[in-house]
Length: 544
Image 1 (tube, rainbow, N blue to C red):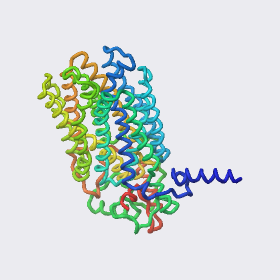
Image 2 (image 1 turned 45 degrees about the vertical axis):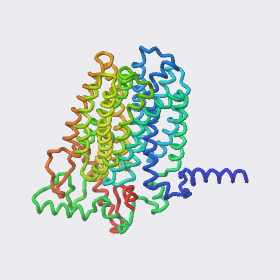
Image 3 (image 1 turned 180 degrees about the vertical axis):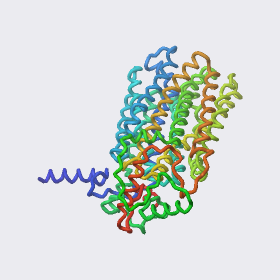
Image 4 (image 1 turned 120 degrees about the horizontal axis):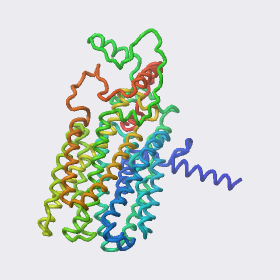
């Protein structure tokens, strides 16, 4: 009995105090572990390391494939592109699944812990790889791990912060992404040159230990609410709610808005008309949440921009190191140094996020593509092995990195804002579980689709038509992306703003019946004037 009691106590300590999964046991350091700074740090480090582990292979792969995996030098460009494509295939195949799982399980942290296991497995496999087949398995596991981080991590950020702060926070996360994407090749090339293949993964294992500690330490906001709020987490005292929190309209608000609309001589077709007669039962829509999201023009525009970014980034990653090797006779160290200017400019992500929070994402995203387009075209200019030409190439990459930081921050913030805006204007449109997981699942899906196309297209173009054509194609893609980015980011640019009393969502009505039903259920449930239902409980925590 004593042994059984000890095991039970140990189980409660692990699941309750440490993991925070026991409903009746308060976790240790709960306020700190669910604080904004810990959540931002955990997600940013997870994103940084996931991308770092992926990109650290880029300058190493051409040499490791030949010397460790005995691949023919004539097949190196092909096999490097295949490795990137397999990573993207893993990301593509699992993004939508993890998006739905994150919303259905209502636990972002659980998905991130699963991704941590996949990342550890991928790192071990790649470290031990001595054949191209094993190398491909490692890349596939990296793609699956990336899907969990990007879906659950960004959904957790959207859960935890108010809309007016989401740009800055996404900028911090985007900075982690850019730093990982371009510090990975830099450090990978330096370490491989100085200490060899296994030393590269020694660094990765050290970083992995930090990631494990952070993901286990962090707790979601809902765990804090469980111990600080009444049993029903979504019922909050009126006096405790900050003024900036968006709440569902009560029956009094609904009737008042209708009266105002009548006096103005205007009627909103989506409003529910107040009547003494009972409302007829509304039929629930069976349309999946993912398809409802695809009815939002702003979101579709963001997904198109994300597709182009994935195409351009991976197309450049798969061809630039080999071009630099041929032109400047760079070794793995030199190939890694190519990405140093991009890593430095990625630090502006939080500043770009502040710009987005204050002025909206349209101009920041447009400026990103406006900078990126000529820089990609000018990458063809350096064509001689001189110091001046090397400096010129580094300068072009620096400005391209500046544009990339703007684009990545704006796109992630816009996707989060699209979901928040749709939920605010049509309460209940995405159901009780929300749609952040599936929205970022779509983000990952289209990014990985672009990452599949990019290396394939750029590698084929480089083999058949040369580096100059590669740069023209990438610049053309960037220029094309500028048009919808300017027209549709934040809403259609030429759409006239409507008065608040008659404003309706500028996106297509995907599920009007669900929105109407949410208004009815909210109004009828507002019997006690002291309590109301918030639309996003996590927003309250972000304000407190």
